[in-house]
Picture 1 (tube, rainbow, N blue to C red):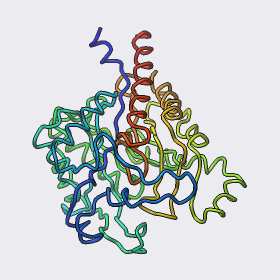
Picture 2: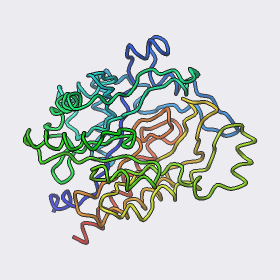
Picture 3: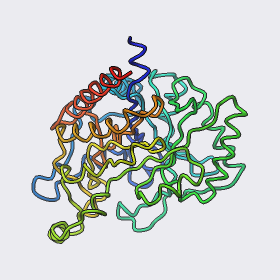
Picture 4: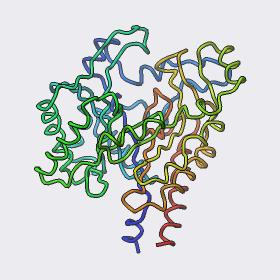
Length: 368
């Protein structure tokens, strides 16, 4: 019975940010010792009852250079029903990588023994959000066939790792900005060929989208699925005079309640086999961008539970391999979307997630 339960269960993958360790580039741009905690710790409330700064609880202000931290994160995520982490991966062309140390150590040390996959954050890094106007910090480049091959072989050891998360026996690889990469069809075709030459069934390519109108354009490029992040869908469909008035009062801040916006995070499109939905616990970009921020207020584990329930219901009838949802995110503290415990809610979000996963898995098993 246990094996049958494992076979049919919901698959949740949490995005994982590796920027909780010092690197030389951030030292040069922002000052010695900068990490994501620098933004998180200096955040201030921008209006009445604005929940800032956010303070981590159980795991503290951790340093990802420590393997003990990574083990504790994996242990916690597994306990509350998350299948694995999707590590953000940075490749700017010609072998230029950044923030690679965390994942490289996970791969090479074989610890933690916890599933993972990769998402390529294929965008230029700019200082625009941090007062450097349009200064380019690192440019994202697409340098053609030879560079695509070099990129493939740099991640092949991960694809071959027994922990790598697969769909239809193909390693998952997500692109953050699929339509920014104008040669992406060539890239996908080449990687599919290289995957088969190296003993894989292929690659399961996922394109992340924030505009639902881009879905078909992404699929036409050769992707296997899209991952919609409908963070601003509420604004597109329901923007009101009250929203505009509040924004005038608060300057350029874009503030909305979680109760209003979370119903728009999932739609009937998520029933489609080639659509992998996103679970969003909250959003508050103000630690990084101050008064240019998009802010969701008053999220709590109870409302989050309702959101999770709707997403899991939509994916529960799919084939086993496709009962997948991404969580945005495990530890994006600077964007206010995280599941790790904080001083206000503690383990509340993780416990809500576990309850909903347990409930839907029981229903799936009963149907099976």
